[in-house]
Length: 394
Image (cartoon, rainbow, N blue to C red):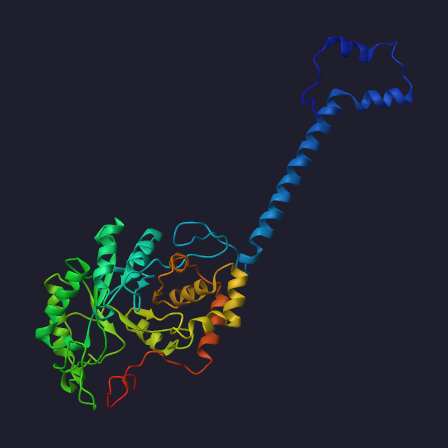
């Protein structure tokens, strides 16, 4: 159907419209009025305006329906996954956290603990392709060589990747630290580490059949070096000054307050999960400007399935259109912690990187649920190492 938007310019039609020979009956008069060009113009414009309003209203209703599950009382704002794709209604989370040194550490890392040889390299490549720029490794994981090879083959420049490794318990003596660091650097194929952590606050005595071995009977650890880790820390400070390491920090917790430090710990890596949220530790670290890294963020291997079946996690995931793992990982970052999820399954590696801020009410609901139960720690080797004390005792 076509519409005339302007009065006709045909003279014959104008003459006929005013001719005395025209029938002037009421019916024809009414018809003449209805078909007058000016009336047509007004009618046409009103009709077009109505159609436009209808289309706009329909579009808004459709948009509202498509985004309603992402809306909350404070309003909907545009947001994005970490891989750049848009996701309506979820705010972005910090991509990095600031360290005391001034460096910025990516908020999500690929953890490679327990990642098997032959699988870890592919996981690292998938992660870097997805957009991860943070890999968390350790000498004791025995996969540094494969991780380093994958980094080189990824095509991502080394300077764009945050690479962490850890000093094992057998190498806390000052004379052993640089050789241990050099081995990790050689394994990873790099000239420096972005972060080097003391893996555990326990120094093993030398001896045994290898660097991991320790004696039984409560005498396998170096009591003096364990209780006074300052010499270990001093040597690590030297590694920073010589450019082999950019930042040094702690894994678990360690008392370094007895002596003045030239370089303060850049980060503290601890077990954090729904089952072991450690709110007091997280609060203390924030107050002391000590960034916290969360390992085993979904819980221990036997807890992951249980974590993902939690009613509160399922509820939030369904409401926001996220996976359950994404809800937990996002919660960790929103708490202000760096999160280290681990997986060698490509789809999970990708999913774990796609995080977004939870609405305040849902974040609070999950936080309150996590701190309401008795905490349960999944990693505590005190008995396995036959120590005469518990590593995590206050």
